[in-house]
Length: 327
Image (cartoon, rainbow, N blue to C red):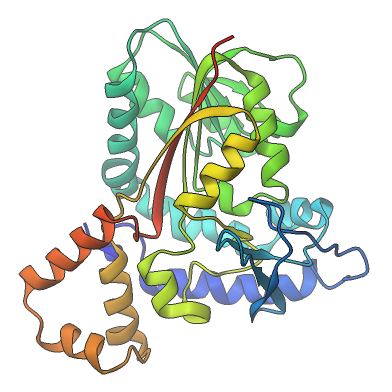
């Protein structure tokens, strides 16, 4: 798979441009911004980098980095509901690639979870279900489970119902009547957006049955393309991505919130393709070695590099499985 298989470069760049403009509108009032310590381990951070007028701190203890000070939740709610960039993302970025993403991303995710389920008759919830693609694909493989889309968007909730899914039309943090209700909860590409990751994980823990599973994907802040590109990385894109954990720090957070078994992998396959694409298409300076590899390195050398990146925990795509303790 290549980056171009799941997102159009020109459309993606326009989305980022619109997001920068929207940030000036929806996050202009800084009087309510608040500083935080590291959301993974609680250590005090130090200045790291600044982008789109958002400041990132880095944690000297666990190497996470994160936006601080950060806006209040109500500013994010207004942004994600009303902003032109959000509407552009749905209509011009996501929808035209929906079939490709279904095949390249959501079908493999569904198969991954299905292969790990010991039995059926489970209650499985997807947090931030969006268009319901993951649950729809899981339903094809494992139809004998109760599948629940947790999706606050009115329009997307409607689409999930049209897919035949049960829907909880609210934010996860607002659910009060499902204590120890779910066998499995999933969340894909959501963790990096959270205003309060610790509160989110604690809520997940409370909604899971004893022995329940939390499966999620997020960005690895120590990933190859993020570290290579730094502030030029499109993954570092506030106000969207606030939290950059890594394989060690995400374990710290989950275990501090009560999960007793955590597995972390970095199965990403796009790191080198992203870096090379930024050099070839957007003239980003990589330094002489990497530019030489881009220009004259063999296909096999680039594939070997990507496999090494993924195998050793340095892909920016991170997949995490956490188990709640059995009482």
